[in-house]
Image (cartoon, rainbow, N blue to C red):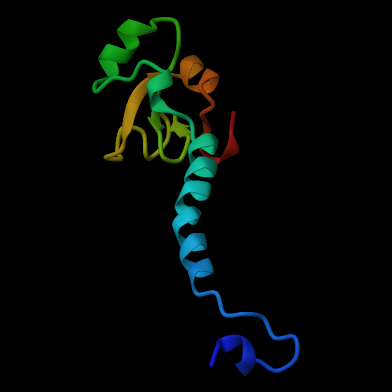
Length: 106
């Protein structure tokens, strides 16, 4: 006996593969959204040491950029140079690459 004959009226057919297709495509869809919304640190020259960044852009201020969040901190802020996933960059280059100041300040 088929499942079709077991259903009363207009019940939907059982399709267990739909959940698997949805689950498999979700990371692709979310990944594209996240990747397009997050600045790419490769777009700017980044440095391990503050002095290296200052030599690269002597007329600009140096900021601490964090790629995963797309923000930067100035040297007056608490997290400047303090996070494990940041790097020193020139402020104008960071802004041109889509980074913004922490806390929304500009």
